[in-house]
Length: 151
Length: 330
Image 1: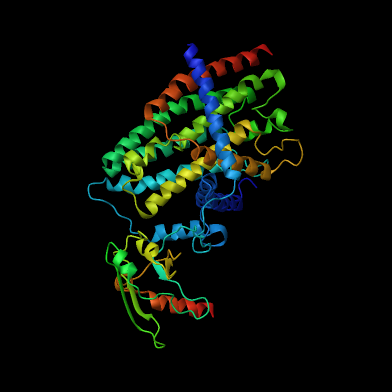
Image 2: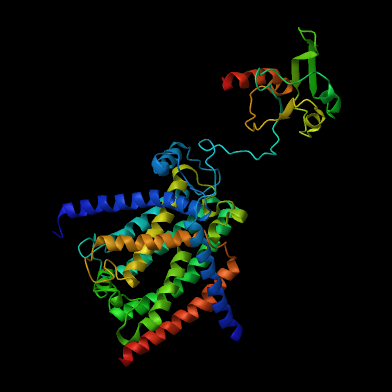
């Protein structure tokens, strides 16, 4: 019989505690993000696909076509081509294709780059109707687009 | 005035509009409330603050195909959604919204409302039975055992109110509680009735949550085990009518609680009594229904029956005896 009364009292108390908790939540601010209207800011260590870094002034890629990144890549997803520079000093990048469908975002290419030419983008909106958009990601074109946006 | 055709027509339209608006917009309130409690914002896209959402849902339900599966009992299957809706709507006739606003002053209106509530339960039973679906039948069996168990304490606590006011008419009961909150049945000061009446109120409220099959007592539509319970085979507006009937039952439950215990249309401080106080009280109660639903997890069927048979029924009978003794003594 004693158990009966303590059950009722404890049960009633815990029910009231539950109501108090939800009442508190009811009046606290909303935590969800209204996605299409609010864009999240990515954390500094967020890893999107890799992108080329352009020169601050000219906007041309910093890359010297040393070939360290395709060699460092464990999944062979980087293809790059270069040609001799017109002023005879070093080489310039002509083509940088990333196969993002194979990339595991391990970051070895970014680590291996000694010329500050490669970084992770903060781009998380990766959607396409066409698979080829990700198998042949043209990073030079992306850099040109970014330069155009800056101007 | 009593026999004028206009009175009947106006009340018919008024009750239908009130019922329809409530059935549609309580869904919206429910979703907004759930959102806030879970710290989301709920519907917000369709119209300002999602206010057109119920209309969009209604149009969606209307445009869907009304499937009647093979092997169902045709006539019963098609009539039960209406049976779920009509008693709830009819109940509105006897509810006194204020001293002047009442469609029909039925003499035994308390009895009438409980009789109509039982028809609503029959709709659940027959709907599940006619579907010929195992989930639906299990669900309606649960609903019936639950409703049976909770109708007893509910009716016994109503007897305490009837003893106190000496009337089975809702308007009479509300009129006896006029003039400030200390006259309301919950807090009735005279003769020390507040000692028992607040227990009556709590028992009645718990029972009305259980009678309307709301969480945490929604055993009949435990979606994790019974798909959608007795509504499993219903599509389109058949399902819509069941949902609307459910929300209307909540409104009727809140109206009953208000009239029986919270003084009906009376103002707590004895000023400006009127229909607005009635509406304010029922919406506070409905908000509590929503609040409870999104706070507690669903109980199990045997715990639910234990709560009724082991706690609520003994308490309500003891309560009835003490109230009767208090009335006799003073």
